[in-house]
View 1: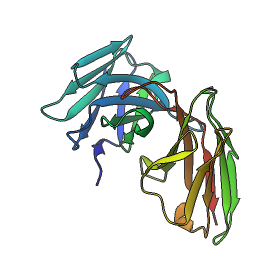
View 2: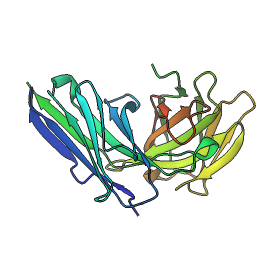
View 3: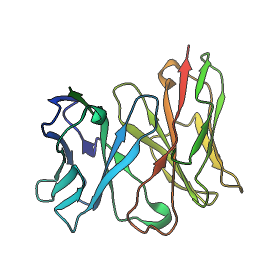
View 4: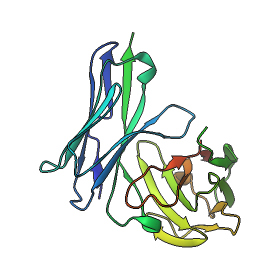
Length: 115
Length: 115
């Protein structure tokens, strides 16, 4: 059972435009959400996170929006740059923190930003 | 560089064989996580250790086992290998004291090919 779903395997956008990556979750216990970026032959790297007490978090060109009622979050990249081309993973955690903390990941979306 | 070290980076072996993947977490991190990324799959959680103790198990096969040693490095043992075990295996660690939030830091992964 896929608790974190990224229904778009790929997305292609033009440089300078907005990239919107979507993620849905089914587990209502999830209360902390993260986005990771992964380049080929590298490990995933943390990008941005959001707690369920917020509906928006911004960091430079990256903004994550959370809609708890819809169990949906999205990552906006504005403006998109060719270097943003990577696989983006959505991840979530439930409040079993401390030494029991773990992340559940989606399957990822391959973003291609065309010059 | 995330500070998480995984060896080997690449491994090619035959069906029925056994391999060991090694992970050194970031300095000071007590938690180690193992994830598997197969073709068209996201990051599947396998197992988590905290300060030498197993804390959570995910979709880990009985043919697979892991442990975390007193120096906090971890090993993932894969035995009776099958073609379907071919995948990227990632190790991640997490800083202590993060409570119910915080990111995981991933290594570059070990690519296992079973022929």
